[in-house]
Amino acid sequence: MPHPSLFVCSRLGLVLGYLVVLGSTVASPWLPVVDASDLRNSAIVQAVSAARPAVVNIHGRKTLPAEYDVDGTVDAGHQVNGMGTGIIIDERGYIITNYHVVEGVKRIRATLADGTTVVAELVANDPKTDLAIIKVPEQNEFPVIRMGMSNDVMPGETVVAVGNAYGYEHTVTQGIVSALHRTVQVSDYQKYADLIQTDASINPGNSGGPLLNIDGDMIGINVAVRIGAQGIGFAIPVNHAMDVAADLLSCERVKQVTYGATLKTDFVEGSSHVVVAALSSDGPAARAGLKPGDVIRAVADREITRRLDVERALLGLQAGDQVAFEFRRDGETRTVDVTLTATGGVDSSLTDLAWSQLGVRLTPIPTASFRKYNSRYRGGLKIAAVREDSPAERHGMRRGDVLVGMHKWETISEDNVAYILNSAEFKATQPFRFYILRNNETLYGSMRLDGVP
Image (tube, rainbow, N blue to C red; front, side, top):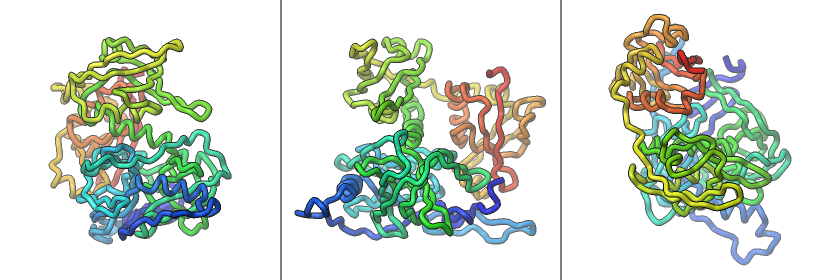
């Protein structure tokens, strides 16, 4: 259970003790400083001016679930305005924000820096980290936020938060880094780890917006503020947020194609580089000649400094496309062509796979039927049977439960489960966390698959 002072109230993301912040919009033109003195055109002014074009307002309506007490329904679910901030991380219109900003919003509207409002689509989300990727229709190239690093953030250094506080677009607040590595649990199912604490004012509407350093580099994504306290706000470190973004935009997830390598971002002395951590046996990268330890410098002529850059370079490509990977090995720069291959799609024996590995038989739930659960998740699979003495039975799964998540992925469809069970990352993450719905409650537990070390 969370701390007694923490209680999640679904309405508008309010937390009794913490407020998971949301926001709104009133479009207004940006008035840059013109012919200002050096004193007026300070580092903060320059930092905000550089970041602002990549900051967007997100708004829409969402349906809140009903609330219950021991006697039954207290308050039926109803619609409210959901609001927040987003950050453009790719010139084609991909935007990162907090998942709670867009969760349950059927028509996501994004207002760009020039005041234009467009409809965005939800591309992917990770409820565990409360991060999501949305996309707006392509126009000319969108300005992209300048990425910093969070591994060298210093307590006491100046930071700037930008967001749509209470609906006032592009509100700027200044403060310092108060502390690092904070853990904040807001409910039984939502916990933020390793947060940056700041005293820069973060208000409803800032959620999903950037926390900048004095150089104008994004070092975090604003996520929450302590209610009833002065100057206690939190942000997800950018290093972690961009790793999650890389997973959400991976070519395996978006296009079901693979390059056959596991990559990691190393941060050393103010710089970062991407290293090949492992290769799929006889996969595309291995066949092309890449080896563990190679440092990826460019993919398809895009400079690579973090894992997200690789996935951005591969966005939109198909199986059979050939991509140039430039890398460093033993002080020498080399280039190989990697041919993307299909991941194989859904395992036709998914039913047997779920039964043998998890010990459950799963059946799809139509979207209309799933809505009755009033869940923060977008969908799930009903457990039709549980095998005796299986991992599922030993860890408390029951017939009638709805499986909504495993590890960091949702289980909306059978395709999702097939992808998870066949994922090398999933197999390497044991025990894994699973999430189920039971009697309008979200429950979770940890499970280890049989035969997996």
